[in-house]
Image (cartoon, rainbow, N blue to C red; front, side):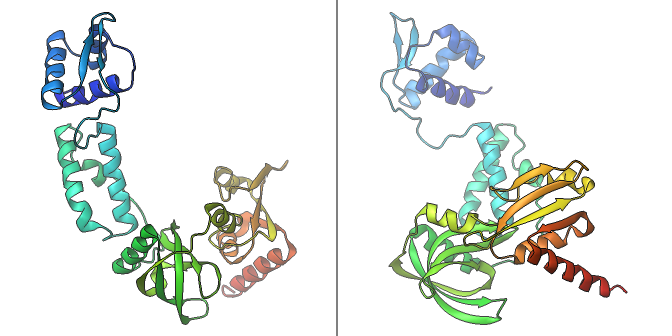
Length: 319
């Protein structure tokens, strides 16, 4: 433990306790000698204006006033490592986002890590983040949408929907940014449709903050709308899908959480059954298909029939 680490730790000890702490206890917790502790106490009083007092009756050191904080920005070694990892994750999730703004902070973190003998920026270099099927939104679009979401301003957007292959003009009140399956989405109140809607950021062709306050939807209402059913599509759950997985596939599926309200059970023959609420079946159908013969749709009948037809159509292509 070096000098700065001991200063920071001594501050944590004194700030976290309301009674005087004996010198011997401080020496033990700081892993230092009597002389070293004396120097640290003097430095904190002199250079950081720390209100450290010695209580003769109690025989220990304490802060003479509450709410004292060390000046400047302080991080423990573990916090520095966490910041380095978080910066790497943000850079990978949205390349270019805040790159200029974060560069000075990244350099500072790397320097501090080097001083703490924690490998400088080596942790970020040792993180491997694999992105699959990511669709990259334009950086200026992301920044405009993120800024309006944070500042609670309405947006005018030009949106190209894939399903209908149509371009529409929308005025929206952004509620939340969502990073889902390596892609970015915006949950927003659409003033043109007078309802909550979800927009893929990579399909927004233009975005402009209008300087008008958003219509804020209560968090509970947003959660109910977007988390009641399986996947990205919102709305009230209208169906329950019952899926049965083979014993081999079940070894993976049983440890996965697909939805907060999923119901799981093991069957006597070793298969694994999962029940999920859903409204729009499109995303669920795609996910079921990727498991091929390792899953059976038990219910509802319309979902079972849809999967059977798709599998049959796929098999025809290989005949």
